[in-house]
Amino acid sequence: MEDKKVIIIGAGPAGLTAGYELIKKGYKPTIFELSEYMGGISRTVEYNGNRMDIGGHRFFSKSEEVMNWWLDIFALETKEESKDEVMLLRHRTSFILFSRKFFDYPISFSFSTFMSLGFKRLVKIMISYFKVRIFPIKKEKSLEDFFINRFGTELYETFFKTYTEKVWGIPCCELEPQWGSQRIKGISISKVIKSAFLSIFHKKKDMYQKDTETSLIESFLYPKYGPGQFWEAIASKIRSSGGEILTDHEVTGVKVNKNSVTSVIVKDSKGKEHEQKADFVISTMPVRNLIKGMDGVLIPEEVLNVADGLMYRAFITVGVLLKNINGKDNVKNCNWIYVQEKDVKLGRIQIFNNWSPYMVKDKNNYWVGLEYFCTKNDRLWNMPEDEFKLMAISELEKIGFS
Image 1 (cartoon, helix red, strand yellow):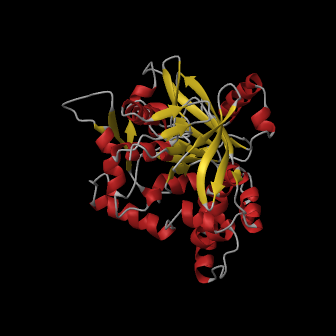
Image 2 (image 1 turned 180 degrees about the horizontal axis):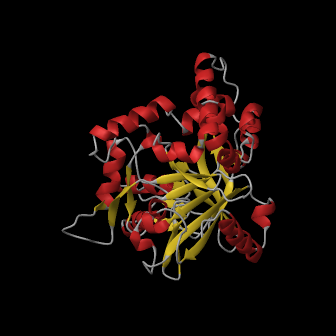
Image 3 (image 1 turned 90 degrees about the vertical axis):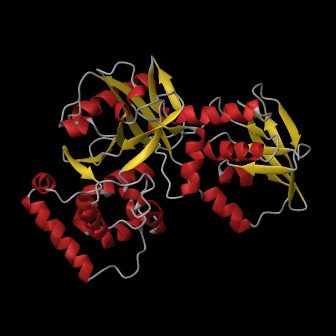
């Protein structure tokens, strides 16, 4: 097996997981990573002693195999023993910010929710929900139809529409309904009510939460110093076992002979291209780039068109250190907030202290991440850094968060 050359494209979670599993089976893979970081967007950035998770990544799966795989690398932290390479079991708390008010997410049917919505909006929500239960949209043609069928028009426009369109940069009426099946899965008002009701009688849940909808899970695992710590540990294990990880190396082409990949073309940190022979290749690079880079195989026109039409969204995270956060104590203690406000570009707020207290240097401060969704080379992406900082602080003040 040591004679077989395995190349993995990308040192994100998928590439590193594949590399580590192959190491255990006796292979010595070579991983080419375009950036200088491990973990892809599931990495952790450190700035003046404060750590920021790029994206906010929970470690949770309904697969015991996956959960146990993580815990074999970083054991669960215990009160008796505290190490650096551990997983913390964190309670999930999240909110929606709408009309300058905070609402539980997943949506709860509490007295405070009803009061914040107001009588008029509450009535409209109830009417639109029961209307769609009686007269559902028979054929869902868009994500908008998907949401309306499950929540009613008023609740959809209140809690889902604006944030979703910020994330994808496309109106919900133009997105396919299958997106909802993937991202929202089986969540609906009835399941939210059921989950809230059962939680009254079943306070203790194991960390696997197999009977809970993914969108409703109450706890998750999180590395002590952020997800980047975990993936850097995996990378270290690969290297120490004979595997190779080359950063600042871009795979620009994949050569194919008789339906088998024989080599990849790699551009190194100095801009020089080299051909690397391979017996096996695992790719985690964007599908669009992979298809464009394939040489020696006739790709059907339909596949080329689909690959070329794939859209990729980017995002920018701004770290802000705050002395205090305006709002209720439970908001200060939450993990993240979806910003469902039309008058700001800000999409989501992370409070890193509550992902792990070790993410912030001074426990008297709040280390906050502001997420902006964009497309590479659009106005937000190309905005000068100083201008972006001013906009971010201005929007934070505008929504009354700081």
